[in-house]
Image 1 (cartoon, rainbow, N blue to C red):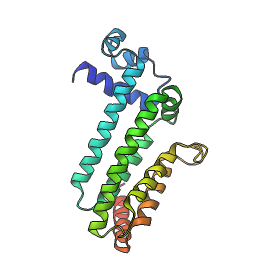
Image 2 (cartoon, helix red, strand yellow):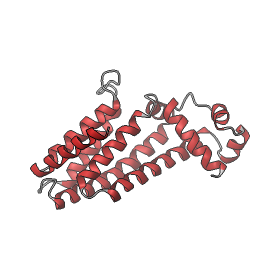
Image 3 (cartoon, rainbow, N blue to C red):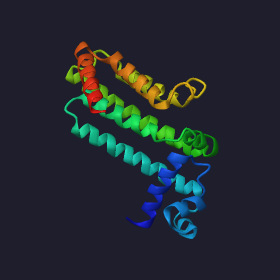
Image 4 (cartoon, rainbow, N blue to C red):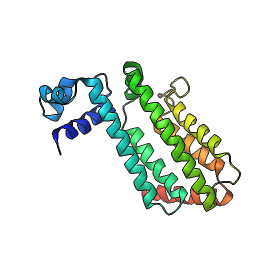
Length: 205
């Protein structure tokens, strides 16, 4: 692995697990075993490095979800795969990570949110379309509206005044919002299949 990619992947994990503000360029250099000079030869400043890390993390997330889709035999297997992956990923993120990003890097925060909102909006519409064709999601849904509500609902997870983290762990909020929404747009057969998949998941944990 080339040095630049190793720095991006390593720094990205440090940001996620320890928060952005406390992870300095000196700390990154020490933890990754590279000189600070090397980092600055590749990235002008911490903001540029953070931007590269965010892009890499989003690409990794997209690749994981694509793998879930490719391995699923129906839309509800995609749902469960995304649920498991999303819940695991959220548990690995420091509570201060998104706060640091929003407060100290507002331009990057907004860019990330806008990109993921548009991408997720399109992806969820495709998911709903597939579910309707397979008979697991109800016919007659306003797919654009359904996707809009789902994405905005997911974005609301970061609102601490709504979901205080000391009362509602982020992974629990994610799973509850996700599953309740999917159940709400499912047919009777869809709910039965979803519950069967959830039950089999319990035995695997």
